[in-house]
Image 1 (cartoon, rainbow, N blue to C red):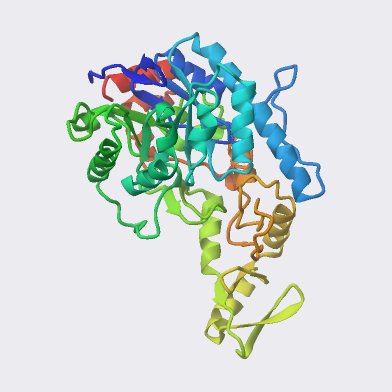
Image 2: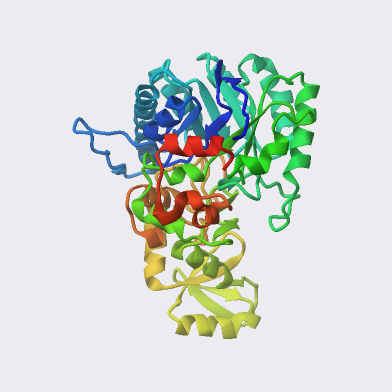
Length: 458
């Protein structure tokens, strides 16, 4: 048994273990409330959360608007209704115990409006807001107006320093802690900087020490660092607990909660997790957000990775041309043999990319990509797949067919969609489901059972 002292998180002493927020309805009010009821910190995601009708059925998020602004407004209304509903469910399930946190993606479309309206509409339900994927300079302003604590997700001391100096120092009273998310091990979108090699992981302990030193410089010694990414057995992190260099630490579990009875993720995906092997989770730069992200390497991801290989540079005055949307484009003559081979394999349609290349896809893929781009619901503040941007004065780039509609792929994962076209984010330790004796014979625990197991050290 690992000895974990209770810590004050969002104003109340609780177990210093938290549920990692997973968007598009994977971390919801049911999972969050169960974690809180166990005396820990539950997290529901406000990234396109589900809402239900009077009969308790999930309301499909169907977009009927003809234009981007119309569909964006529909998305915002879905998001606010879903976030309020999940906050209320979490409060009911918590039985007044633990803490309820809400996770938001700073780069999601309309984040500021969604966050403000959920906190207004679910007053008293949410105790803390966890936010990553971007530099959320306005986070403290928004949450503190509602008396709610905030927890930025960072992957380096440098990022936190920039946030604190520019913004957080003005409302440090409501800064509840800092989530350190290991960019090489965590699931979902990762905070790798341009100076860091995605193939060369760095020592998390040294980065945590640097983060604590930075926090101490700002007199934040009493705030916890919540360690996220790669956390499976607490026995493997025992040296990080009550460590003088690190100070107060808590631990976030993002992947293990996917295999619980309360988790709404498609059951087919839960079975899939049982059979994952080391390396089956891939870190790639394919997300339309522009961030690196880690997800299960299923058919969808394999097809996207293969697509990156089927492209040729555009070269002016080259003798080799290819037809793109009815006009001739000159491409690198050195790619002629590859192009002929791809066309024989059925990848006969060329599409422009914003990187001065053309990629080759099948006619069916071409139709699907164009349809998804036209149907964009503006779920991100800026999308490289569709070229949508919330900033009206930004010159729109060529939409990138090498990416994908993230809203569609994540909705499929959460709502029993096509496994081959679903995106499921996961941490790089997900293969351990198949190795951990706790999950023998395809055992799926309740949240309560999982937390009891975590507290045992394993």
